[in-house]
Image 1 (cartoon, rainbow, N blue to C red):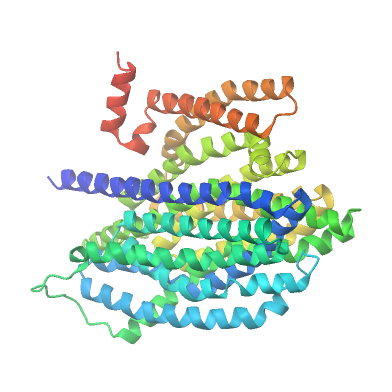
Image 2: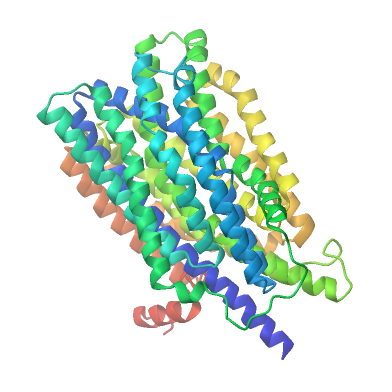
Length: 567
């Protein structure tokens, strides 16, 4: 009976991981797709391709520094809250969890105000050396993000609250409403400024970045609505008496700050690496290449802004899975460790089978989603770049290379989130240090050897090496099985290979006979090949049963029967 209960708990944990990942994936994809689609009119309303690329580069300069400040202001508290709420709920210490949330909310409000003030005052210093032709434009762009920086920490803590209760739907819907409001405001503002009023490009960029504040306010209202509607689920029963020693509010704040520090540093790794590109790409390329200053700015705009926006769609799949992993693994790991301690055994000497099973399940989800998405993007890189921006061989190549980067980046987020969910914060920080040092060490030699692609390769290495380190750490504590992981990942690899064998000849055949596609033609090619590739991949994962991991065995079995695979 105990084994049956254990198996049921394991399946329930995997089901929560699947459902949470599904909701966050849908939200991430919708948000990222909107974040890419808006670029089509946004770039065209900005003017000629050169002006549009410069506008995108200016937009990216503001967001790079804003992202760093946001990570510091948020300080990893939402992820830490998500983990700690799951931890306290697993121990049935609901009152302690709610007091922790209230204390952290006050901390986040103060952090947002202080962070916004510092960003406003530091904007002139941060703008020095950035790849733009007018420093004043960079200053105004950075300062336009101050209102968003003030309110977003509170929004983040609200999402951490919902995710701590493993309620991903509300958090996911708030992400979608935030992006819809942001994009709507941005496009209306840019159209009026550039097409109606003929305002400078910099003014349109400033309003585009200010749109982040509009989106944040709408997201807060969305979460407020869901809290009011479902508040009974978050209330503590009247007769409930919490067991265990009372933890003072000051101790709770100290606890959340200590736990959140690794979350903020590891969560900001992408922004750190992007800032390294922002601050070092121009001076290094000026020294090691024969490109003019305008060509350097243009190439940075292509790989550092244009391509990076497209790649965020891919990475959103992995971040959705990693965001769900934290509370689910924290809950399972806490329960399993508690059981081991009750039996008088140490988690350092006994394999944690439930936790390792969830980790392997998370890696299987990662492979099932990220592999077809990344390689599909790479095959369609040319048409994708043309539809969103304009036809450009350089942009196509950088996008293809960045698809490989997305795989390494996604794997890093999965492994890092798992390490932190198990409260291995020291090891998490070592992985971050490995990433930053790798990027700094490889940036100059790879730019010297390969030119602009060297920056992408340096970032890829910076994500890959700590992922290997994290795997070694997880294997030490949970006894992961490489054989089991390979067994669960290989069917996805097999399905992707079949997909590529079919779609690559079609894409390159069409582009060979029609070398110059109109934008509408490129869009049709994306739709047709996308549907063809997705169909082939789904048939393969249903046939080899790897789809069971993604949609559940019962649903997959019904689909196989409908398709006649079981006959």
